Image 1 (cartoon, rainbow, N blue to C red):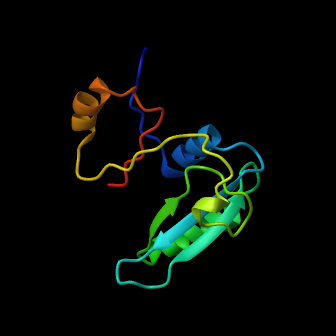
Image 2 (tube, rainbow, N blue to C red; image 1 turned 180 degrees about the horizontal axis):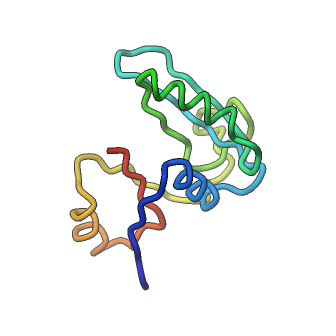
Length: 122
């Protein structure tokens, strides 16, 4: 198996990742948190539709200091944000903190398959 590590522009990387994770019509949930305990902002959009209005909203929240997360599996409908609202588990994901990409490659991939996608948030 050949693997590559490719760095894309953020919007292109998001579009590629969402195309892998979601099918047209799937509901994608975004949650935006701010460290000082402010209100959690949420937004939903259907995959395969024009995401520009949601992207603009997420961009504003990011500029205001919010960290942006998305549900890796589709929701049953707009507004769903609990476990029971997850339509299905099309993918498995792991959130790994405080480790470099080189450590992931050398340690984790010894026992797990190479990930389809790696999202590095800095």
